[in-house]
Amino acid sequence: MNPASGTCPTDPPDPFAPARLGPVALRNRIIKAATFEGMTPDHVVTERLVDFHRAVARGGVGMTTLAYCAVSVDGCGTPNEIILGGEALSGLRRLADAVHEAGAAASAQIGHAGAVATPTGQRGLSPSPIFTGRSLRRTRAANEADIARIIEDFARAARIVAESGFDAVEVHLGHGYPPSEFLSPRLNRRTDRWGGSLENRARFAREIVRAVRAAAGPRLAVLAKLNMADGVPGGLWLDESVAAARLLEADGALDAIELTGGSSLENPMYLLRGEAPIAEMAALAPTPARLALRWFGRRLFREYPFEEAYFLPYAREFRAALDLPLILLGGINRLDTIRRAMAEGFEFVAMGRALLREPDLVNRLQSGASCEALCVHCNKCVPTIYRGTHCVLAAPAPGAVR
Image 1: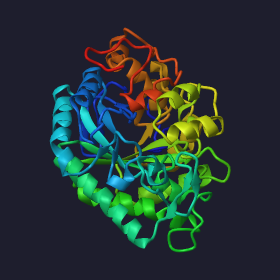
Image 2: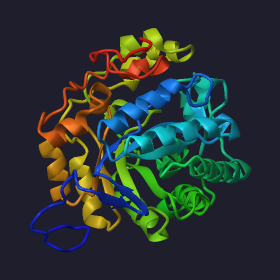
Image 3: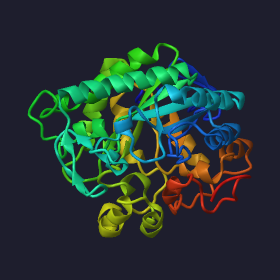
Image 4: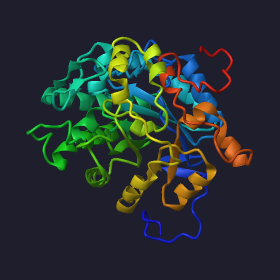
């Protein structure tokens, strides 16, 4: 049975057949996940970034996702992220045009780094004050004015994404960023209308999504990236994350949810799985992140064995509970895994590291030239975010900086 529809289809969807994501037509059901590119040192689109997404689009994905674009200056998590202001418009249009010319749709992930913003020199915001090893300082609790401003920043960012010609906007509600922190019973110790019950803790995420939907207009698909589990004791887990997803679904503002887990703030490897390249990260990271990695690296970057489709067991809980289209993420390397996701009722799959190694992987899977990605999940691509994210095992593209 397909839990999303209550029917028993004889054949699951073909992952390479055209599909709809809300108002957007995609050529297939495979999405390039947001993997931070690290190619925007001046906070605006560069030709290198355009080339990166053009290559993935030519490689056959249905949609490629421009990773983490900060909705404001104080929401910027690293020195080389796009900040969604008016000066970003022309570059975003170039990127969207290049992706469209290659036959794919373009999505932009928008977010506010909150407590994770501290490496930029800003004092991080969080629902309640916390000490962060990344910055070696305490955050400030967001007040009502901060909350209202951040919600409006998300809406303004969505308008810029729409004006730039993108087809979709992905609202980042996971990975320890502010909406995720507000959802977390571990990090949100507030006693006002933004804390306490799950409904209160979910209020911030819901208001952001509703504001983005209103700002994006009917042409754009609106997605949310939502944690199923934070991967830390006392953090968000399945019982409450499924309930939060039901609240988001009931609001009617989303076209799909991409299911994820882990926290850039507390447990990054829960998202990635596999080896933790701490020495490489410490060698390349800016100060004070370098010091934090050397002192707290082993505690922060706990290693988890890699398994194919490692989020699938948790994701099944969401598929059984929701009618909303779901995007399965997490270590998807094989064609048979993609087909299994379709058979279990997931409308789309998202691939990240595998497409860093082989931007043309989807074409190769569809043609039968390959049935499995070459990615070995060594995670040595992660430290390269400070000089342009790339697979260290892949041949350099012409003109690439290594």
